[in-house]
Amino acid sequence: DERLVSVLVGNSCEEASLIAHKLCERFYSRKRLGSAVFFPHATEDTDLSCKHIVSTIAREVAALHPAFAEAIADVLASSPGLACSSDHFDRQFEDLLVHPLQSLTMVGPVLIVIDGLDRCSDPLRFEEALGASHILGKIPRNVRFLMTYNSESQLLN
Image (cartoon, rainbow, N blue to C red):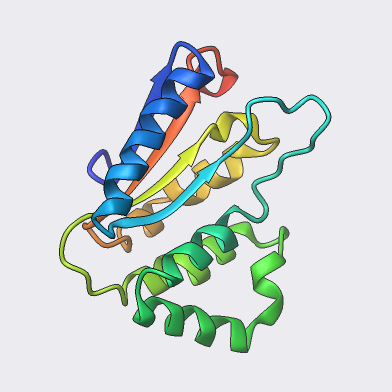
């Protein structure tokens, strides 16, 4: 759904990252930045995985609103291993992010930025979870995802 998910493609990593950073600053100044995850540009010696991206986003959005923090705490109380589980990424995405987002009663847009998703080792897992039709229908209309990619990324082909 183009109203919920935007993709920013830059000719270089820095170009898209700069725009994402400026948007983060603007949303942060208005207390509307839900989360900002920036994957580093140099990845030669690092295995960057998306396995902790959902718990990172959930933790950052929890700081934005107490109802969201309570919803996440309830989920983790019943399934404590879910926050660091890489085996059940779809369930992690739905239980730690989508369901608690439904308790977010803020008026106005909330932005979640993932910069350089193409630089992590398993970006398709996140894209598939976010793009699943049963997930998109549950994300509140005021929550927006922005993902940036390098124009040379294999994911865009």
